[in-house]
Image (cartoon, rainbow, N blue to C red; front, side):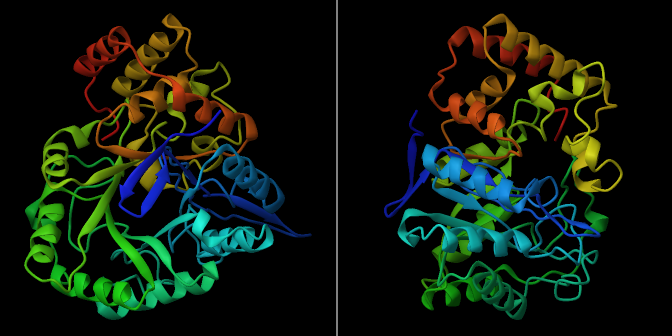
Length: 384
């Protein structure tokens, strides 16, 4: 079964599935180290946040082999991965992906490699003291460090992981102007990224966890300065449980020809239905394994919310009604969006990868879409 491709740029073709490597488990006599690797595929993006925390290095390499053999060529990571983030494992996602590429002797031009620079946090002191901001020094240092860990000469797509300004994220839905802080001008960020492009270190740039305001500001400055690169895409959350992109962002991206890399298409595994089993799901499932340790994920994917549970159960019912696996319904829905270039997902087991890949060739009927929209109207965006 072949994975369809998408022309993200004239000379950049990606799989519509993007594999994210988020948790790779390394073991020694005394401890387990967790790693995350993200893999982007041209039409279907597979998330890799599970590699390092839930998979051994050998298991992770097998999943990478399986994904690549299935036709996935798009891989996404981030300098802060794996998650939950820790000083001891920071950067291992990129490092181990680079090792896989070298060990398998894969030609660089057969891969589309994406990674991200962390925005201001204050919680990750081990990454440039915070990071404190996205000024030119921080961006330049982040690019060089990622290239070193990946053991590569260039990065195909370099993304700003989250903005250098206050924006509601990870479950927040309302803007609070009192939380705004002094931020690095977008022009300085674009200038640093443009110099990296000119130096051949990165080919294209993108944004993540962005808003219509941010997208338009980046585009505006690039249009008025030939030295600034234009953003190619935005990586935001999109799933049956989170369709906030379809508000202002969809109009913005449609008119400006910006594609969406849809992360968390399975809502951290919730849409697979596994957490609704009588035993609460497998103990190694992410929301069980990292309970209390991954605040960003748990704030958005909170299984105690009545609307989230009710909406998910109805989507599971739609999958059963039409004889589809819940994973297939969720992935096929995301890929049916006209602005989605690739779906970024994470897997820890071979059979999970097969289910996601199988969804690539499913076309949802108008009846299925109508049923989905009825649920959305009842429970709009329970995981914003």
